[in-house]
Length: 434
Ligand SMILES: *Cc1c(COP(=O)(O)O)cnc(C)c1O
Image 1: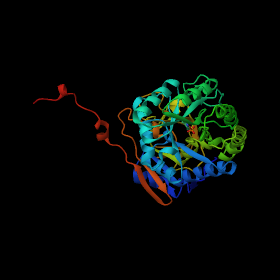
Image 2: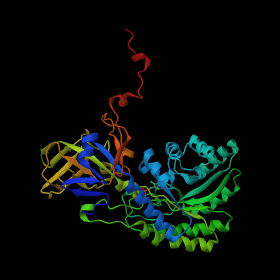
Image 3: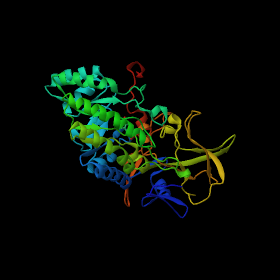
Image 4: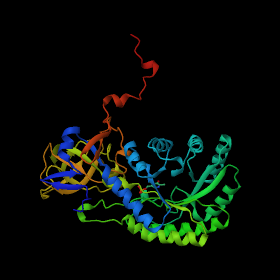
């Protein structure tokens, strides 16, 4: 199996960093998200070095939606990352983590007036998704007596080989403004009194396992960059978005393009484009998944085994904690963490505890013979894992533990039943008057 460096198998046990997963499960209970800080740092450094080797003025904006835990944001802030934020909540988290407002980009296809007012107040650049939004932002900035710095989100209409639910740069997607309408959008922005166009932005989709779509999108972007530079737009940044995939199918030896592959395929096109345009903006990239996905595993305990039309392994984590398999038909590698050195002998389907037929974490996996009390590790759960969790079926969310070398500490406590009702109110007419 093509395991990332921080995952090892020692004496039949799966280890993450310097920690035996069996000890982690014993200490913190299951289900449990475990994240390796060093792995996030290594991934960030790989991105930074790969991009810097091709161009000196680069900035990495971590896509905060992938994993919005404050501790994760703080790791990346400490390394110099900014963030792509998609909501006021993510904006607050990124600022709380110590990121500078000018290193964030407020994205989103449906921002509210209060979102726009917040971006203006905090001085966070906005990726504008429609002309309606542009006009509202101009009004909001005028009301605050400020100038809003903006980019437009370009829909470059490139086809990407990924799951349709995570392809965002198709001509038919809800995101961005069609590329042929972009120059006139900048024309209108230049005429606004309280908006200053300083950037241009695209993001073509997620879990893309080839570099060609990024190169095609970059070419589309650089054609527009040339055109709007001639119109007098002074570009400070060109943001090419995120979307590089990771090799979820580790058992089959799948690989993915590295940040270096990406940089070598894309950045020269960027350099050609800016040279022709006679400008030297920063290059911004917004990786989410490729920075954090493989840093986390989800540990889940086996409650029972049920031989039926499938051999079900009933575990204590379901789509309440990891919705990707149910939502995107995603594949996550499964390891029997306490029997990790044993060969697979039996075909199992890993089923969660949620009252839904679709609550299956993995179908038909060859694993060693399992029984109640065994520990299952679901790999590559650091992106869009806990971030998409819910309390469905009134299940308190599990804790998240962060590892730093030999240290381990909570980065989020587990919820308890009190957390289920914490935000609920009893309507006055239901108060008992005894
Ligand atoms: C989700 C998102 C990203 C990150 O995508 P990944 O596939 O996780 O790298 C970057 N930019 C924008 C605008 C996004 O919506």
